[in-house]
Amino acid sequence: MRPLIGLLVIVMAMLTAAACGPGSEPRRDPGDTPPRPVQLAVVEPSTGGSVETIMGSVVARNRADIQAKVQARIEKIPVVMGSYVKKGEPLAELDTREFRARVQQVRALYEQTSAELGRYDSMLAQRMISQQDYDAARARATVAEAGLHEAEAMLSYGRIEAPFSGRVTQKLVDIGDLAVPGRPLFTLEEDAAPRFVVSLPESRGGQLAVGDAVRVEIPSIDTVLSGRVEELSPSAEQESRTFRARIILDSYARVRPGQFGRLLLSVGSEESLLIPDRALVRRGQLELVYVAMPDSSARLRLVRTGRRFQNKYEILAGLSDGEKVVISDPATLSDGDRIEVRP
Image (cartoon, rainbow, N blue to C red; front, side, top):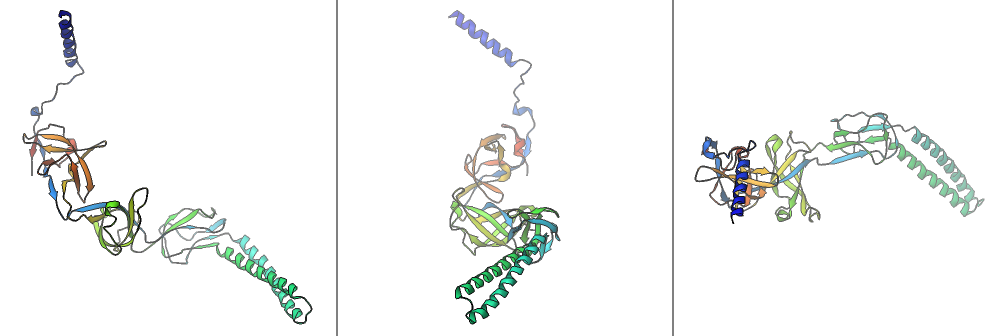
């Protein structure tokens, strides 16, 4: 028994020595520091008028990657990035010497077969040739005519034109580059009222219909625009389980394709607990808040959030109605800090 007691005394002595070693720090007593001035918000339920935000992007009404239909060197590019062009105006011109030569060659063949067919007409009327010989001559003339049309079409592809009026948003080639079918040369976006594209979750897929009026927030320009649902996919995408919607936005000079936006969608009368987004502290995968306690301290609390509204989060677990959370720089606090409420 005595050897066991002696061993316990030695272990306790070693632990005490380690705790008092040079690498240790005394535990800070929250009462040793002055209280931190903070602002609080009350956790309260919302039973109506809540708005859920769904992220999306502004896109052009029409957008096209312009490609060449034939392979040739680029000789002229009359546009630059940002240029406005009308439908049918040139974006680039290619070296078409080979195609012009082909047109001349096929036109000569067409003229020859057409003249031959004319002679065969009179010969057939005089019964100097058979119907079979005449049909063969007519077939040769028809093939030559089709070849001429094909060669002229290939020649026309040397002029790359705008398919609609808009602005050149990307210029991917320079003079002297080889235009190859399948490789984009320019990106053209229609200069018209933009669209907003958003993916609706399954739970909200049936909440919108084509023609519905909606609101879209564009945070970068601090603007909320009115819009109307133009297209709505009837089926959900298998990978994301979302319904794709396309919304016509009101024209506004500062709205540009590619900007981030949020669809402001009313959630009706569903009851939920809400906290300001400023109260949430993220540490890795954890979602935390600081709760104001009756003893004027701030205690760290693990929570689970749901939907994000315009400037609030829905709380699914971790908080109760009526509790108060810190909303002024909560990430700078430590668990147990003394706090003092300020207006």
